[in-house]
Amino acid sequence: MSNRARRPRTVRGAAATALAAALLAGAATPAVATAGAVADGRVAVSKAATGPERPELQKAIQAFVDAGFLGVQVRVHDERGEWAGSAGKRKLGAKAKPPANGHFWVGSVTKTFHATVVLQLVAAGEIGLDAPVAGYLPEFGLDRRITVRMLLQHTSGLFNYTGDLDSKGAWVPGLPATGKEWLDNRFHSYRPEELVRFALSKPAKFAPGKDWSYSNTNYTLARLLVEKVTGHSFDAELKRRIAGPLKLRDTMVPGDRTRLPAPYAHGYFRYQDAGQWKVTDVSRQNLSLVAGAGDMISTTQDLHTFFSALNGGKLLPGKLLAEMRKPHPKSDPLYGRYGLGMFAQDLGPACGTVLNHNGNPPGGYAALMYSTPDGGKTLTASLTAGDAAFDMTMYPKLLDGLVRAALCGGQAGPAD
Image 1 (cartoon, rainbow, N blue to C red):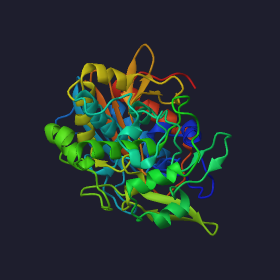
Image 2: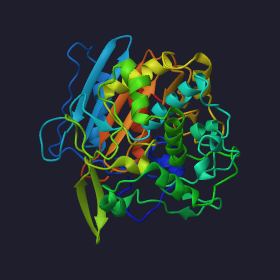
Image 3: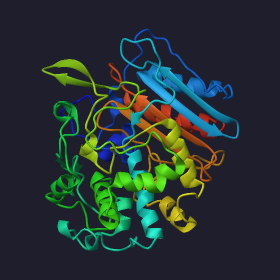
Image 4: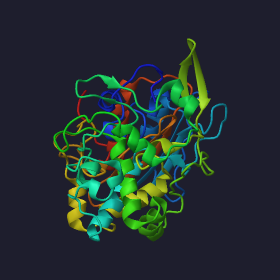
């Protein structure tokens, strides 16, 4: 989240200085803007008991804490085995470091799970990828040119219900998703249909298929699509199709649940109130605000298992996995080009393409999920914000350093 309560930002504008547009879950600004410094300046890092020594990874996660994040937990799988570590603090005022496999709000990583379930239904012949969404969800009166593919690709043109730019570049406020307004409203319960109808009350940004714009509305509709076609809740379908077969014991759709399961690291929201900076623990929040778009809970271990299986071809037929990875040329390029629920990012000849979808809820947390195309190497992580301001221009460099340390043998990135 931004620490400027009244300064609206677009998804693309936030991407220019921090997380990529499609990383974001609810708000148009990333939670990491309020990252906090470790109180005593010390960094505690742990590694998996059976994992190799990875000083380059320790250095990369320490850099986040030194730059102002309260805590980091990271898991890397590659040909050298597994490495799991954490740095910083679990909670303001405490000495304990974050748990190496704690639960966290994953934000827009949720979108990759939803895209996968939709494409599984496409593979089964129950949904047409290029069929009109209105044919499945007639109750919303959607433009019949909007297809299922356009939802997953962010090319529908639908207004983003957490706030968006209009066709002329002017900011149109959405449901409370940033600043003190969100903080005061963070336990409010929304229904997915309510979110969609709010979005449809605003003019479309462009004609369906004519441009690209990251919109949470697309993935809330994707959840409703899955539920309409299957007759079951998305949570039930997630358990049957992904979580059950992969034994993801810590991945869930919380609904109105506001508490993270133990163990977890605390995340904080820094904001201005009457000219004074204040900090609130936002470990508890109701993420029905971003149903289908950013409301899930998971762990670094579960995200590794899921993303490795997906990219390893265990969840989708090869043809649909290729569709998922096909980048749209107009999508925001800062952290890759968007396909159907994931980014494809070219890190250069020494490293090649990595696939990713990161995210954050409106405040306190951010999540990272990266993989090589064969699923053989993965990086999954959670970052927590604390009580200090953070220079957002540093974030892309920190992220690039961690990704290259984890997936590229520590090779340096491009020169600044």
